[in-house]
Image 1 (cartoon, one colour):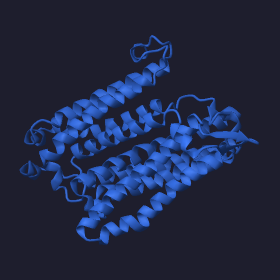
Image 2 (cartoon, rainbow, N blue to C red):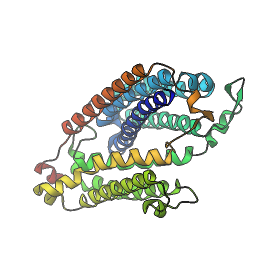
Image 3 (cartoon, helix red, strand yellow):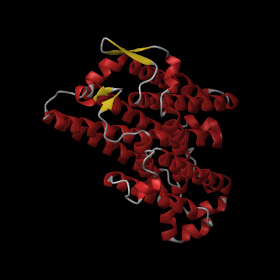
Image 4 (tube, helix red, strand yellow):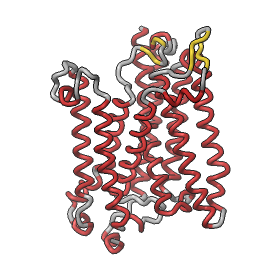
Length: 361
């Protein structure tokens, strides 16, 4: 019974966490891309960042609800560490939403641009705190168990948590890749759409995204155990069939994403006149998202764990009846599907792929 409870708890946690990771990282990429295109547009109600960020906040709230309801013992024992981190994240987002974001809508143009940069920085900081909290749960640093609860010894030591730098670096790289995939799909960024046809935007962004893809694959390779290289796991020589399948799928998605980005560098008029080539340029929006989900899973070390924050997993999960946890899984899946549907509708609604776009090249 306890193993079934653990499976259901882990399932809803993983679904909520990965959905939040993908959408939040896409929002981060769109935030900085909007700053590049025109920082003052970041507070535009029609901008892609504004809409994607609202979906990301909803999924982040879902993840926090899952943590509170499915991992009550974990929060009780780690509350002195996770509480301030997550509370700071919420405060940063509230201040951004209530002050800086609104200021970006009303200030004169130069100050509006400065406020736009501040919004992107605040979003980056909030996501960094989330990554730090996740990394700390994998490898607690800077805190000690006192009477069964973690007490912070030195807050600055938390930054040295193993894996934090690697995961956040991967997050920034993935943000670049997903932002490029968004542009290649033909969706507007600032809400106007005219910026998408310009080769001055597409070509450098695509080149940077391809370099980021290479770096992401390298980070995934670095997560392999010392006794098993990336090649040996890929070829199934490690003896772990599940790990080999995961690495193979990751590599296939990497190749598809890279191919889609390469195709997008061809003549824009040729792309728009050929449906197959146009479909290839849109493919990275899907493949890059799944690739990032799998990469995050491996870089963050989210495989089968027996411990969370150094504590036995079986002692931390909710003791609610199985049917209650099953309903929780269904509700989490429903919310995630609704969020992804909203994101897909937004992507289609902001698409500006047409023959007239070629005129801006």
